[in-house]
Amino acid sequence: MNALTALSGSAPAFLAEIIDALALGGIAAGLPRDLAHRATLYAMMGTARLLLERGWAPHQVRDMVITPAGTTIRGVMVLQGNGLKRTIMEAVLEASRRADELTRELFENQVRRA
Image 1: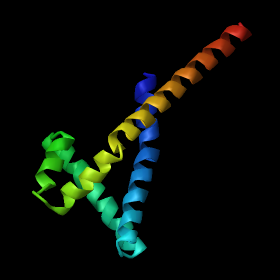
Image 2 (image 1 turned 180 degrees about the vertical axis):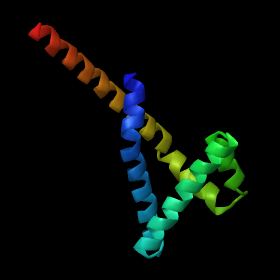
Image 3 (image 1 turned 135 degrees about the horizontal axis):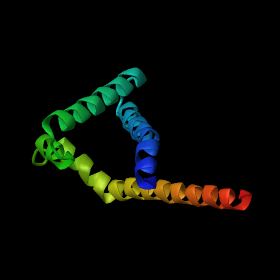
Image 4 (image 1 turned 90 degrees about the vertical axis):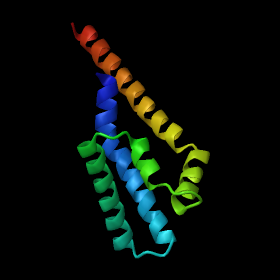
């Protein structure tokens, strides 16, 4: 249960960080802030909708978008090279470990009061 709590409870913050990073990348590439932010949100919303409605796995969407020697594969190479998936997975694991700690602390406090 703590793993689910950590994932569902922390995911909005993790996703907000990813959205912010994508929008900042768009700004760095020359887009106005508002356009970069809205484009990121629409891309995330469209991707989530596609995954939900079609029942696809995330790699299927990625593979649908990637073209040989194209822009997306170059970006994916950077993400993979910098360990994006591992970093996100570790963030979820750390949140889950903290949820376990909080559960133990709560239990210990209840035992002390009894």
